[in-house]
Length: 436
Image (cartoon, rainbow, N blue to C red; front, side, top):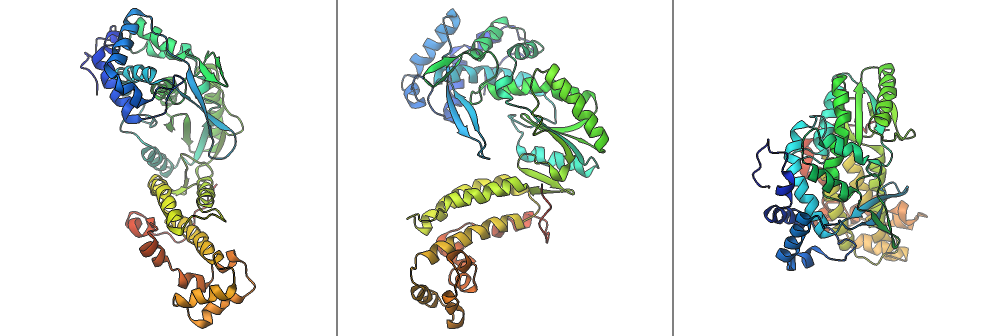
């Protein structure tokens, strides 16, 4: 949503961005996206309580050029692989409102100029589209991938490059000055404020658009060379038919990125490899089919372990509820896999951990035997609990499966099963894919 703006009036964008009407629209976007407070401690609810006063003051400061963006609050988020942290920045609500206002005006101008092979942080674009595009390229015979990893991309975006790229689309010096102020607002961490001489803070409303603006120069270079690629934010894969050609492109594009874009290539993570050995947005293209990557599957098993810890006093219903909440989002993201057995593996592992939990609640084998019998397990099968097996081994026995069947978990406990609901969406394949 935005104010009506003539597409050729690109010298007076500042006046529209800082108008009270536009700031109101921008606040709606900020409220919709929620988020935590900045360094001033003011939440969205607190800001909205005095909305007109807050926006009026922001408007007046912008018009008089007395506005100064506050430093962003630094937050460290552990990376999914457990190696290091991802640095995020949380601007104050009033600064987020201004950035959202700039984004609402700039996005319709910049969007039509972006590449059709760019899918990240764009309206109407998503990860599934990027993966399907990559799959179609591999199907065409371009099975070698130049997998480029940019080291600390958001932290190393060059401020001068942002303004240089913006000048190609708009001509309002006041807007350039305002964006420069936002980029140099500083970072609050550890009780002190650090200058931000480069980079665009992850977590700010404007950062995704500016990142696409910077990497659009890479997209244009790849298109000029007639190379097929898929890019989602800073995750870029280029596809070629031969390994020799892929190595040549890796060398030349790496030089372009480091010299022209002033960014840094992570040499350890960047590589040339067959598509089946490359992870793209958590997926792998093996042959011509899409599969959940080995790394993503490993992370899923780790998540299940966290959701079903040993020795916890949580009931099975509480554990299933927590699993369902996570699994709904996870399975929706990875629905593109053409190997249903991967979902079966996740669900089977979860049920086994739950069976182990139920078994461990019986501290004597005779009590476990009685439990098996009470749940309809025959004497011959139930007496297997007296074997010299530990809990984990018992959880996979016929007795445990008959006592707490797959149907029991679905019907009585409420455990969701993606396979039961979505089997019709998949090809029926009999074996697991070879994954990286």
